[in-house]
Length: 196
Ligand SMILES: Cc1cc2nc3c(=O)[nH]c(=O)nc-3n(C[C@H](O)[C@H](O)[C@H](O)COP(=O)(O)O)c2cc1C
Image 1: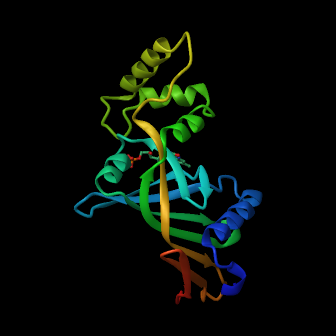
Image 2: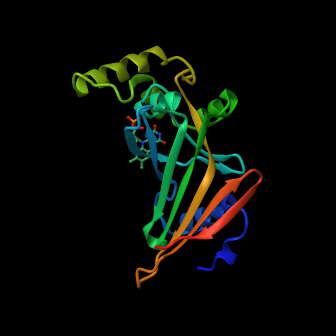
């Protein structure tokens, strides 16, 4: 991989890599998202990358989940996408902002009814007495919304990682992999090659 082939805009490159992954990877938008508590304890989980444009990387979740609470207290995140079939990894770091309610609602309305009921029923990241408690909550929410639409709960919405670092990694069989890191300096992106 040559750094000149990647261009000057890492978001455009990430979009191109994602398109390439869509052709060969079953779930190309699965992204490991790392957040941290205010005292620095990290946590990571997989979420789906639902939007990617010049503003950043968007995902949706329950704002009362562990990640939501960590982001409320410490609005920074790192994310990793890995496409084994392509030998490619992308790492992103940046500040995190909530997407506006209209955008969250627009995405919510594309979700299947069962997923919307599940979002109402699940106290995401909280301990449960057992599966029965979750089943009972699903039954209760199914009854509550049986005669109409399932609106977006106020505690559910999107976040956008506004990237200030993006690293592209390309596998080589000799283990001398290519790594090109972009760092945003004001309005421009500076790039440099890193040792593997
Ligand atoms: C492939 C995959 C995709 C997932 N996508 C999402 C997602 O888009 N949003 C979400 O809240 N959780 C998603 N999850 C579940 C999360 O990994 C996680 O279990 C949940 O969000 C609770 O995380 P937390 O307790 O750290 O906040 C996904 C899990 C997998 C394996």
